[in-house]
Image: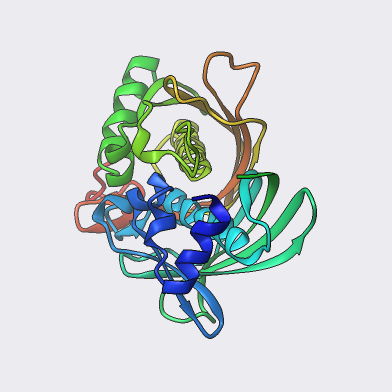
Length: 146
Length: 158
């Protein structure tokens, strides 16, 4: 099964675990995907191993960034007509609030899908979309079809 | 402070951060405001890649950690400084053969903000995998037994 077929199967069954099986890091931090009216919603569970600051306690900033990068790459693959493996070029994150140890959500906007480059904006939040814990943008280099 | 003492202090601090401990991170050099962090290879943290290359998110995690710790190595007393923003550029992918090293320096501290920069590499520091810049906010607080406390207070544990 190629990537395009895999994505089609996931969409048909509204079950994205098969694609997450190919991203060990996503499993390591506990990422899941659900589809709602707005599009794909990415969630990060409450693994105590994701804590960076045990006093508050708060999520490690790198985990929040990693979660948002996973979300951005998957959103790009799920949105585009001809999916390829996106390679990260750069990633820029603004931390707005401390991430508490509770379910975290991310939504993505594919701002521009070119032939070689994709630009994706990501918002991560916990209590409400209007109160983001972080915003980020990513550029991906798009490779050959696989 | 001499390097051995700074190194031991930085590693003790690193080990109380759950995610850093889970990844098996270790600080291997610590000079004034400059640090090197080592991350052993682990296939569990690879990306969507048949060859098991490390995920970009892990490199961001390494850079956030080492940039943050470079502040600890630059200030006379440990101060809680959350990340304000971070940007990472990927020159190439990390290979699946060995440890990744991340180096950072805190090059400017003002009353409210710390400015840091760094890079990560595998075999050759002159052929980096990523470059990074990150800024951090100063809180004026440090780690105490029951939460964050004022720097220099009796409850401070770091």
